[in-house]
Length: 408
Image (tube, rainbow, N blue to C red):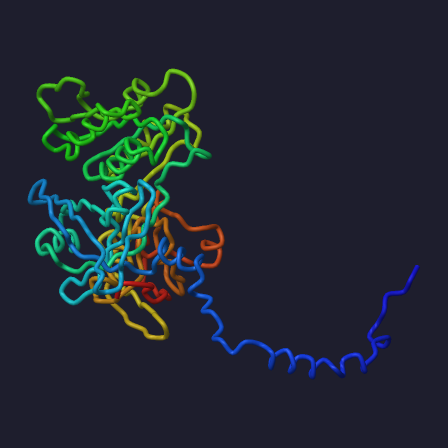
């Protein structure tokens, strides 16, 4: 067997001419500037699809009621955004706004179809949240022409033929109808290929925003079906159901044979109720999809919440990029909301414990994280990381928070 050459077998004289050869090659090379790698077509496409920030402006406002409006947003070319990032039906934008001098961010589902981005606009439907600083600010102050700062489209509440069944039972409540409106339009336009049966829960038919629009899409496209489920209507309208969305009702509209997926989007109370009903159907876990329902409130109502913490106020110490600030945080207030109320700009996108943008290190103290919104990885739990958007103090707490990544 031949022996492998070693360092001693190399001849130093073989390297003697390398420097001269390199200098000769450099001298013979073109003196034209080296192309900017950031401007390669693939990089330009990546920036267009996933911009760090989008500068938009309000193009039109449609008021469904004083407490719910749809805003049409277009690129603000004067600020450098010339086109909109494409999205998949079911995704959302995170809006960054300054309310009374304090930076706040909130996610809002896109109610327009993906194809409408090519026409130069998104549509976001905003519903007033009682006590909500951002929803109230938008509904009460935004006017046509106002500047808006937004993220790229985000979220995984999207249809995938590799994961989801060919038939989807959509369950919507309140403003949770917005991603389903986008789904319905995308199906009708040919950008999505699945059958959607939408169970839309509302108090009355008058409360069912976009119901007429989705019904019109269903009449034109056999892949779409709308069933209004009305809890407070005295008389059941034709084609609607009365009551709540139960396991029996889901089974009534699900395929008699074969798999089907269930997509849910609505308020926290709806998720709590419907999830219990879904357990009766014994669906495979991958066929149940939840959209973000927003922030978690009233952790003290959970059976596993430590009763001795209820009603107390603790001290929250926040470290960001070497700077430290201490504020009050009530036991029923998330660490994120306490920071924002004190004027501390902290990163946040989904505000539901899932996306991980607010991922922060817990340096000291005890906290409570509701199991239903605990989106941390096992490594996060092991090494002491939390998502402040759905983390509540049980003692004085110290956390290390990353700086804001966009929109400030």
